[in-house]
Length: 104
Image (cartoon, rainbow, N blue to C red; front, side, top):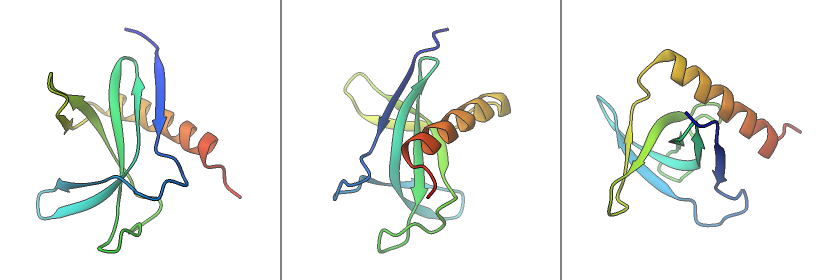
């Protein structure tokens, strides 16, 4: 497995936030795409839930999924399968967030 790490953040100052809706068990949830990155040859997407005005519901809450594209470039997401994978991906995302958006 490759240790290739690629980060494709959505710029902080971008006016047009990229939004998606995910289906949870009991509701649909609108989310802003924070970033898509590659870790060990697998793409991941980080989503932040937003309200009807596009404002974050909770700045500290994000959803992280595996990110996939089919042969035609159509995107989809899939759950991370193990706790170990989630922990590894979450640690990497935290490092990215700390680097790209340092605390004041």
